[in-house]
Length: 610
Ligand SMILES: *[C@@H]1O[C@H](CO)[C@@H](O)[C@H](O)[C@H]1NC(C)=O
Ligand SMILES: *[C@@H]1O[C@H](CO)[C@@H](O)[C@H](O)[C@H]1NC(C)=O
Ligand SMILES: *[C@@H]1O[C@H](CO)[C@@H](O)[C@H](O)[C@H]1NC(C)=O
Ligand SMILES: *[C@@H]1O[C@H](CO)[C@@H](O)[C@H](O)[C@H]1NC(C)=O
Ligand SMILES: *[C@@H]1O[C@H](CO)[C@@H](O)[C@H](O)[C@H]1NC(C)=O
Ligand SMILES: *[C@@H]1O[C@H](CO)[C@@H](O)[C@H](O)[C@H]1NC(C)=O
Image (cartoon, rainbow, N blue to C red; front, side):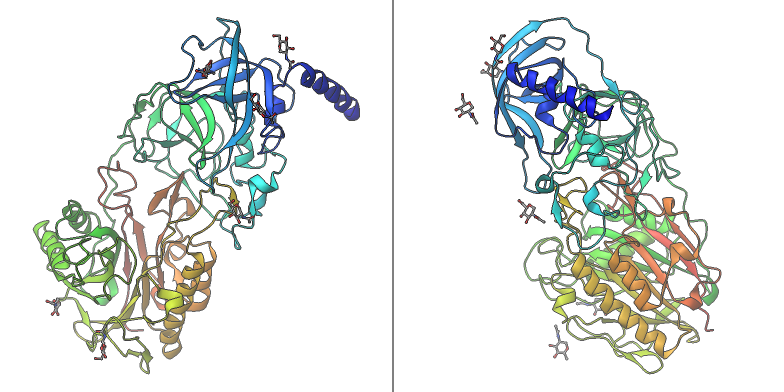
């Protein structure tokens, strides 16, 4: 039976190639068209949508193969689309099959280019979009591509390009294959929900009525180990030239979306016919504050973590950050901060001191009703630690000096390497970890290790504030290289190993030592650098310790995913009775409403001597 169908299919195909080429034949059942670069004539299709630079055609001679898209984009150039062609026309067109992408790490879009000799065969035909998940199969929920080998963050990455490997599409298994098999198609997303805020172009990720994994309590999708949510789709600029709203937030309900699927800007998009409309905003707008407050004794100190995004004395988000620390983190005993810029921010004039930045934040906290914090940091060497050019971002601590103080204060400088001495004691307090190790710290922030004691001098604990190198320059999660290029992963691996070794030295001196490592690790807990960090440091992931549902572990939104870049790891002796919360003040709000791109977190820990 199977071979019979194949023979019929082959005969049918050969008939059509004699007189004309079908859209399914142009798309083929792989990522790259088998007819790429060839001229095609009499390609016949129903005009389902018109964009500013081309039209979308749906085949009038569909095949029965769900891996070959029945629709295609006919590109003609901005403002060169024939005004007489309208949606509902059946047309025949001649042109050249081409594979287009605007950057080398994007997937290609199969198009008919240099279109000419377009003939209207009939008009006024009915145009009915395919409802995703109903008229199509359901989008796969876990894997993006065969070449990810089951883990989109697996290493090594960048082992194959989809365009070169050009596998047969498996739309029921792999998300990219699913969306590729629908490219050019007019589709409807029923009852969509926004799972991100829009980017600066108004592009917003959504899910529809099809099954999803990773749904968190707010309505976003959280990335978990082995599941980075290819079932989500990004909605781009409307074809009618209007703009999507910028006030959409995670969890908003939207009106049904109809548009065309297209691989552009490194992702599979739906370009909607008209702008997104929010039907119901998510409430409440703000999260609850932390459920606990700082105690004054060793058994109940609290520890906040916040990447404050290029903080300078004059940035508009300084007061909102201060308010978050007071009103949502309940003024932690000690704050781990990242991205404190020098006193004149991005002005690149040799200034590295950040006392004005930190003092301005401390004053704003006080003005917001918080306590009088002290601060400590180590100035980096000018322009050596990456981040915004000239900004000299660094790590810093704020602390309540009526509760805790630095233990045997002995600050190091930008080039002095901290060491763990018998006791354990720190050679420099505070001091940077191995700052001259270029394999680990070139153009990156060196972790700041400190030893603290309660003001009675009785309870000593150690903190390491980290900001590992960023993922900037990674390729798209739906891009051509597979698994996607995880930029900086080798350096983060080196950084994790150096930091873990330092922690292990403390715990070798005293296995009951209280050690807290917190910061922006720029990596997920289930990716190699952090797996290494946990195994080599001997610390425990505090999210694991408190048993938080993996779907509620997020401090950041990127692509379609709520995800966790900020973490706290604690030593064995700190696990008992610990509390830990991520406070979603920034991920839940609009881009304009956020004080930072990261959410803060706060923990309550018992650092009494054990
Ligand atoms: C295209 O269609 C026209 C009729 O509309 C026909 O004359 C011509 O032979 C066709 N071309 C090819 C290459 O099949
Ligand atoms: C396609 O057609 C164009 C214009 O008619 C011609 O210049 C070109 O050589 C053709 N390409 C192929 C691959 O036949
Ligand atoms: C593309 O532009 C050419 C030249 O202006 C025109 O003849 C043709 O009809 C256009 N094609 C489409 C699909 O609009
Ligand atoms: C993937 O393609 C890019 C751009 O063409 C190329 O630089 C890279 O080496 C390719 N990667 C692999 C694994 O072949
Ligand atoms: C910065 O502030 C710290 C802590 O208050 C202080 O020890 C240091 O002297 C100050 N540095 C400068 C350059 O004022
Ligand atoms: C750090 O201090 C040492 C010892 O005083 C000195 O030799 C070194 O130049 C200092 N480094 C910086 C960056 O200030």
